[in-house]
Image (cartoon, rainbow over all chains, first blue to last red):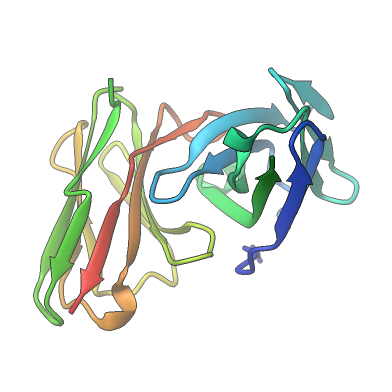
Amino acid sequence: GESVGLHLPTLSVQEGDNSIINCAYSNSASDYFIWYKQESGKGPQFIIDIRSNMDKRQGQRVTVLLNKTVKHLSLQIAATQPGDSAVYFCAENSNNQGGKLIFGQGTELSVKP
Amino acid sequence: DAMVIQNPRYQVTQFGKPVTLSCSQTLNHNVMYWYQQKSSQAPKLLFHYYDKDFNNEADTPDNFQSRRPNTSFCFLDIRSPGLGDAAMYLCATSRDNGNTEAFFGQGTRLTVV
């Protein structure tokens, strides 16, 4: 079955350092993955996505890595800034589940100046 | 310009008094989702529409209902709110099922007194 993490791990980094946020997903049939950033009191905001036929995708200051063998997704943020402080969620989607977007565990990122 | 609009941003309702949350979109997307998000937790999918086709999650309580009178609008009805229903309710849309990004509104924070 599907699993959605209900705990909220935290990651604290120094401004300017790189951040790595990890996520495990459970559905091996998932073929599309998204990272969202959520600031306090706001809705999730799209950061970057990746399809299952890729293992890496880069955006501006962000990189997503997908390891289908171990069902693991990571988000790398380069030169982390105070404005990056937020909760980050991974989400997975698969056509064989009617295209439902299911969220995985969140990680709270705190950037120290 | 806001593309997914949720009203109101904050809603206070009495225990047991029916309440309706609304969501509208200007994207002309086929899919509309409703999520419930409690503090420090991931958004939990309640149900979604693909056009007029309603898809309920197996563990969504009967107390939660939804209506989608047209492409642009979707409503979440809570028939008899309990204290445990206090949460952030998020609406999202996507162009299609599967491999497309979902756009979120800013959410409605529901308080039950």
